[in-house]
Image 1 (cartoon, rainbow, N blue to C red):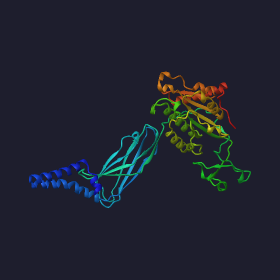
Image 2: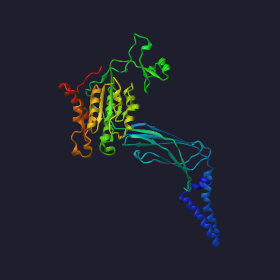
Image 3: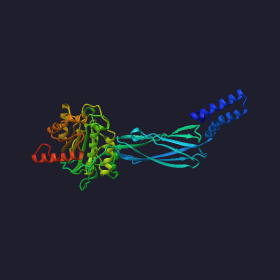
Image 4: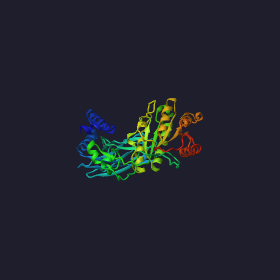
Length: 425
């Protein structure tokens, strides 16, 4: 009862004040008829509070989002299923689901006729033009009487995630070169000679086939180990994204960083569908959630797009190179750069020497501030270090830029340039 009285609305408090006023005036003026009116007006919110206080309702909520991984600009559907597991009916339900403002306005619903065994299913859509990982919920529930005199607030604590990935565009096929390395284990080979002790193993990584677990080594080491079934050739690609704050210009979704993330996402999808096992590396190093995995393209692009969805600008002045210390990686390296400074040149040279083939998309970041100030970006510096590089400006189509990157590689191959495809054994 105390909670119900604390939930009096402005209308309910006005009824209480009017009832008390009417009774006091009736006593002072000697009007018995006014007393009855005052008692009726005063009793209405009190009786309503007593009825709501006695109502024993237990609401259950099930919230689902389909799909949970959606591209920017595409809608996702949120489904809500509410049930009343209580024994007595309640009043009117006023529902409000909390969603981040980038997903749209908060949906509100009014549900009536809540009784024992009551069940209701409602849906609404959310859409975001901004990439990121968002939490939908919690749900706020207000129980109100038909007269609007009392509102009791409830809140569910559960939330569900929604990941909005960058927009991607289909890219044409171009000659990449240098994509095959001798350190892979993509396809099994038969161990015709030697015993089981000769099988090389490595630690288990998320996404590895459990059928490749080497149980004897796992028991000896104390953690899951899988067979490293060496294959002379294997297609690997490293996708590098320069997400340093000092390397980009602009703010929000119109910044050069967002263009770089979108370009990296398109390249990741393209390489995965061409049969590459792709890992993501940023200015802070390799992302452990998007390391090399040997699975089909659809499963491989999921972790990559999720990692790119939450990439933020970092304040690190230097590029992390710890991922270059691993021996025998080589393979194809595709990089998306912002502005490049003199201190970055040794790192660029080292990255180019580490790769079997080094391709780069260099954003002309000054053009994001003033279209007239663009001068080609860092493409000349990258070319001098042996990269196949092309510039990307705000109004350029990424598929055309990618095709131009393929043409530049073909020209360098015919001319015998330093960036031609080479095989790493």
